[in-house]
Length: 110
Length: 120
Image 1: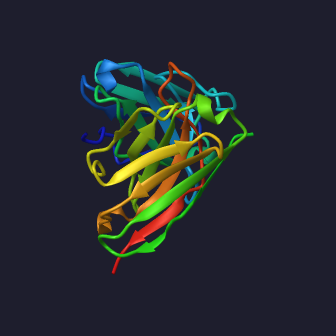
Image 2: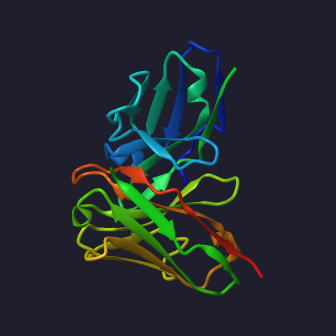
C-alpha cells in the first residue's frame, strides 16, 4: 500500500492553468476508474472536488477537471484563482478493496 | 444536510487503547459505507479503514491491521473505531467520512476530525 506519487508543490499566476499528476500502479489508479481528488484548506477537513476520475460534484467550480491515462491521473485547475490555494490529494480504490491516498500537492497562487 | 461528528480523541499512552465515535445525521445511515482517514500533524492524508453499509465487510490499511477494529450501529447511526496497541505514529487527526453511492468510490462528506495523541 504505497502512497500514490504527487508533486510536492505546484504554483501559477492568477488566470493560468496548472496540472497536478497522481501516479500509481495497475493495482490502483490504472486498474479502476475510481480516482478522486480532495481539496484541503489549512485547518479544515478535506472536500471532494473530482470523483471517479472526471466527475465534478455539485457546487464545485467548472474550472476543475480530472482525467486519467494508464497509471497516472491528473487534476487540472484552469483560470487559477486565489481561493484555489490549498493542498490537493488524489486517492484511488485498490485491488485489495482498500484505498490509497497520494502524497499531496501544495498549490500556490503567485 | 449531512453531518458527521467525531468524538473520543485525546491523549493516550503508547500501548493503550481508545475508541473513536462518529455520529451521523442527515442521510440514511444504513445505505452507505463509512470510512476513517487520518492525518498526522503537518503530514498528508492516510486512509485507515472502511466498513460496508451493512457492516459485514471491513477493510484496513496494513499500518493498522490487527490493531484497529471498525463497527457501526444502525439504531444510533454511529460509526466506531476501536484502536488498541497504540503507537506514537498513530498520533493524528482522525476524520470519519461517508462513502458515495454504490457504484462509486469516493468520500463525499467529512467530519471535522478528532485529535488522537499517543505519548507518554
